[in-house]
Image 1: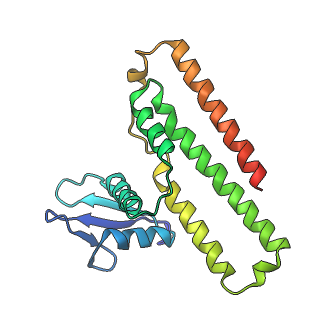
Image 2: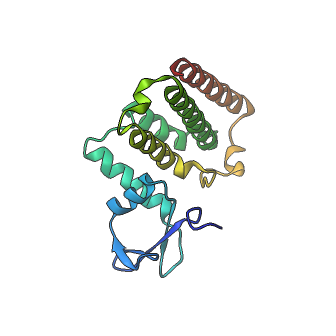
Amino acid sequence: MAEKEKPLLIKRYASRRLYNTETSDYVTLEDIAGFIRDGREVQIVDLKTGDDLTRQYLLQIIAEHESRGENILPVNVLNDLVRSYMIPGGGMMPQFLQQSFEMLRKSQEKMMENMNAMNPMAKMPGFEALQAQQEAFLKAMTAGLSGNWSGPSREDDETSSDKEKSEDLDAIKKQLSDLQDKLSKLS
């Protein structure tokens, strides 16, 4: 596996300090956010137990940015996320989010290609940096949605009726269709 494809291993010590194994120095959450913005995947593990803490720390990074007023997630989206943990069929949410971000990424890539091909702004200084920043942002936003979901299992869903599952699935399909329509209008 190439060095850029391999996740950067960060070890958390008992003191809760985070250690970059490549550079042999301690890092902060902001440093980790910078690695991700630069397009690097990270994996954070507890040194003593070996537990993967990546999801926990990525959520903490998002929460800190949100609390500083760097709001990306609207309140209604946050409410829907919380609800997805509580309703039968909530196990569909990770796949829905992953597909939505993939569609967003593809639409943005297409938009950037169109801008490069037709837009005189593409020749302006700094345009390439803006494009790289947008690509890194999308990669960072979709990093946790790569199918490593640990939500409710299939057995948990068996308690709900088939009708509820069908209704939930229909609602998700409609939301996905609406999102696709909105994204296609943007391109």
